Structures are given as structure tokens and as C-alpha cells.
Figure (tube, rainbow, N blue to C red):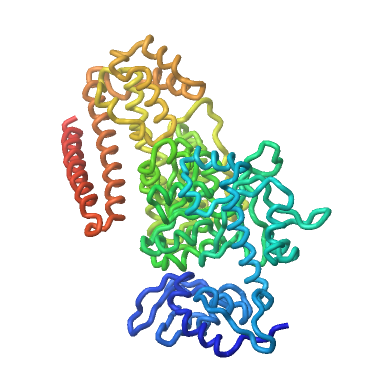
Amino acid sequence: MAGRISDEDIALVRERAQIADVVGDYVQLRNAGGGNLKGLCPFHDEKSPSFNVTPARGMYFCFGCSEGGDVITFIQKIDALTFAEAVERLAQRVGLQLRYEQGGYVPGRQQGERSRLIEAHRAAAEYYVSQLSTPEAAAGRRFLSERGFERVDAEHFGIGYAPNEWEALTRHLLARGFTSQELLRGGLAAEGRRGPRDRFRGRLIWPIREITGDVIGFGARKLLDADDGPKYLNTPESPIYHKSSVLYGIDLAKREISKRSQAVIVEGYTDVMALHLAGVPTAVATCGTAFGEDHIKVLRRILFDQGQGEVIFTFDGDSAGQKAALRAFQDEQKFVTQTYVAVQPDGLDPCDLRVKQGDAAVRDLVASREPLFAFAIRSVISRFDLNTNEGKLSALDAAAPVVASIKDRALRGMYAVDLDRWLGFMNERFVVERIQEIAARPAETRPAARPARVSGRKEPMDPMARLEAEALKLAVQRPALLGPEFDALGADAFTQPEHSALYQLLQETGGTAAGGSGGREWVERLLNGAGEDLRPLVTRFAVEPVRAEVNTEERYGAGVLTKLQEITVGRALDRLKSRMQRLNPIDEQQEYNRMFAELVALEQQRRVLRERAAGA
């Protein structure tokens, strides 16, 4: 057996592997003066950076936990490698062929287990990519094409195809010199009755890379109806793959996450692709598990988590998405960074949104984020009937522990005020005292969150939702009061999915011009065009009284419409400002100037609307 790595080669590895570059793959480093760099320690949790790197001396040290050493020590510690494995990995990084004493260099035989498994996965990834162009992989190429991905996109993300055979990859890797035991240990193969067999067969393959870019696992999407396995199948836990700390896309996103101080968390591989291709290169996804504490640690090191960045979760607007957001809420305060939720009201995931509405819609989804605390609280209270006193109190009791769990005292107080407004009590002192009372009780005695039993759809008590409801009620009952300005709003002016759907129905039925002065015929046309889900809402809005007196309906309608227009313009301004913040006014001067002109026009439009609203 070959012996130890030569001392000369070890010295060359230390010299050529620049510590700032190596550490920078794991930790965002900033200038700390005096030739030093500083970041958040990857070896213990901290809120203030105490991890220092001195490139001139090739050393690092953490003043918080006293971990320190050179570039080899760092790789040993961060990736749990032996000394020899760390040297081999760094040598591979800098293109140095190592020499071994007492027997010379025999490629592959002296490498540690991790290095061998990394090489096996690299070879597997190359094999899968080569198979994507075969006739058998037509279903995989069609899957990508239907989701708006081109060949160049598949190449960029390293997507491949696993042949629908028992031992295709296994034979290929065994011929390359890897052992059956290595394939089993790495999760590339599973034990069959006659030896190892391929884990993935007849599936589209995504390589999962760690932060340094090494392939450590795969995600596989079912393509064949005869495949009775799950839709997505991931590599199992292995010496190199630990799903609780893996983020798909982190290798591609890490630089932009650091640069923009932003990370966007999505739910799948195609969503990551869609966001990157739409101009949001900070997107990553978990791999077959919920977002958790180990994922947070990875992101905090890259974000240089000092309260200036943002982590944005994207969830569907359905109940499953709300549950996912509430789980994320439990981890939110482990970040110093601001945490947000971006929800697409119509339930489209980012990939489908890009296909149906284009890249701009994906960017706007991210730009429309709202604070996670607000989303979590509103998700809780949305389960109750806020039209009754009993429902309001039940909602308050259910939301109180959520508000009370906010650690920042000032922020907790502000959300208590918001909760009062969202519930419609208009009694801040009562709500604050109720929160304090509920939060002080033992967890087992707190009131359960019991959804109120109501028939049909209930109107959320949020002021924006009420305003939308009034405008739609007028469109159903008094369409002539609103006219073409209402028809020009667009469905995205409505924040509630059912409101947006009703607006779309109104336009498909001819708009307000077709409704005339309203009446039975107009309502019947709307009901005939509505699906089962919308008919109760049309019926309700046709019956529920308009809040204005008959002799002031015209003025009331103008006021509702103007306020809705003003809010819509304000939302457009927020999105535009968010996009402008991501532009470099020097490098992208033409685009920046165009957006600035649009900003000025929108501000002027909002001023006019505010003056009109004051008059109404």
C-alpha cells in the first residue's frame, strides 16, 4: 500500500490553496482592516462576527470559540475529513498531482472515502448528462420543454437522464474503477438480489451539489406511468450527503446571495431554475425535507447575517403553504436578517408562473414579499369567522401566542396593534392585555384554534380586502357607477384570490359597460359564467347592501374606485423601487433611467388620485 503524502506536496498545497478563497466558499468575508477578513464563524452560532482570516499568513481564528488553523485544518474541520483527505481535496482544487512516499503514487488507491465518493458522483453526473440526448430520454426533454426550459438551461444546471435499466449506471461506474461497496455507500446503487442495482431508473436527474460545487447526490423526477415510486426520489443519507444541511442551487447562488444580501427559499428544483432564469439568482431549495436549523446555519454564513439582508420564503397560497410558513415562523428568529414570505395568490409555483406569465411575473412575486410575522398571524386568524364576536375572540386567542413569541419587544407591540386592526376590535389596550393573558398561560391550557363553521366564503376583515369587496359589490350591483376605469384595473389589483377571480369573471362577461345599471339579468349572466366556487360570492355580493346611501352612491363609488386605484399604483411603485434597488445605475444606466422616468410618472399619478380621493 502506498504511504504518506510527501511533505513537499503538502507545503505546495498550503501555498497554492489561498485560504481566503477556500474559506470564502463557506463564509462571507468582509474587510476587517489591517489585511484581515472577518465573517460569522461556521463552527459555532454567533450574531456578531468573530471569525477572522489573515490571508498574508494563511491562517484563521475564531475569537468566539477559539477554533483556528490553516487552510488544511479548515477543510478538515468544516467537512469532517482526515488530514490526507483534506490535502487531496485541496490538491484537486489547485490542480496539483500528489506524490506518495514509500511506494509512489497510485491514482485513486490512496484517496479517502469522501474523495472517492465525490469522484463517483462526478462520474455519475457526467453519465446522466450524456444520456439526456438519447432517444429513450425524449420524455425527459419534453418535461423540460413544457416547463419553459431549453437545452442550454439543462446544460447550465447539469440535468441528465437515468436509463430505465437495472444496472446501466452500475456497469458504467464499475468499468471506471469504482467498487460495488462505494456505489452502495454513496447511494448511487441499492442492494439487489443479484448484487448492486441502479437507484434511479427511467427518471430525469438533477445533480445536487454542495457549496463548493462538488456533486454529492441527485434528485430524480418520475417520468414513466409504470414507475410506482414517488414523484421525486432523492439520494439517501450517505457519508457525503446529509439532506438536513443541503440546499439545492447553493453552489450557483452563493455569490449572488452574498452580493445582494438576499436568499429566496423555494420548494423544488424547477422553481430554482425558473427564478435563476427569470433574474433572481439567489434562489435555493431544500432537498426532500423541511427548511430547518442546519439550512439556516448555511445561509447565515453566506449572508453575513447582520440584520441588513433578507430571506424570502415562497409558498403556495393554500393551506399546505400556510402550514409551511408557520413552520418557518418557528425558525425565523434564528436569523438576524429580515424574513419574508412571497405568496402567489392563484397558487402557481414559480415554475408555472414563469411559463404562464413570464419572467417579470416571477421577479414581481419576489418583490411583493411581506414580513413572515405578518403572514403567520394573518394565516392563523383567516381560519375564523370575523363577522361574529365569538369568531373574533377565538381568532385573538389563537393568534396571541404567535404574537407573544416575537422576541423583539418593540416589534411584538407593533404586531399587537396590527392584530387589533386586522380583527376589527379597534381597542388596542384590550388586544394587548388579551395577548399578555393568553401568553402567560401554560401551553396545554391555551385555547385551541377552532375554525368557525360558516357556509360559503367569508370576507377577511383586512381593510384592503374590505375595500376590494366593496368595489366588486358595486360592480355586481351598480356597474355603471364604476365604468371603464374599473375595467382597466387588472386582476392583480386584488389581493384575495376569490376577488381576483370574480374580477376576471366580470371582464369575461363584458365588463361594467355590459352590466349597465345592474339588475337581475346582469347578475344571472355572472352566475351563468361563474364556476361552483364563485357562485356563492356572486350571490353574496348581489345581495349584501352597499354601504352608501342611495343619494350618495355615485360619490361613494368614485371614492372606492379611486382608493383602489391609489393602492394599486402604490403597489406598482413598491415593486418598481425594489427592482431599481437591484440595478447598478452606472453599469445599467439606460434601464435605470427608464425605470426612474416610470417612477416619476407613477408618483404623479398617485398624487392625482390622492387629490381626487380627498375630493370624493
